[in-house]
Amino acid sequence: MADLLKKEELVAAVAEETKLTKADVTRVLASIQENVTKALLEDKQVKLPGFLAFDTRVNPARTMRNPSTGEPIQVAEKKVVKVRPLAAFAETIKNG
Image (tube, rainbow, N blue to C red; front, side, top):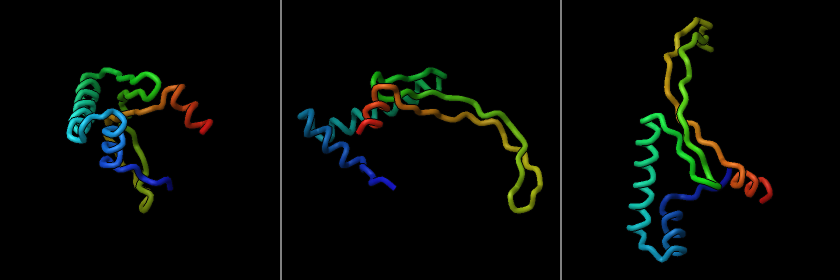
């Protein structure tokens, strides 16, 4: 498994690169999260050009099997968040 970049480390790196305080960067990240969440709750797609796209989709209700007993169980419909890398970002990661 890959190493984890913790929020504090990300905040410190962005603060150093942008010359903003860590508190300001933390507020910016919180605002981004809040606004992306609001947009997704309104069924809007969010694109950060050259980076990521956020969208929602609905997984329909379906019948599955309990792996222990084999009994059928109903799984309710649920709304999920889909996050995907956009082409430029994916290509950068692919080519390392």
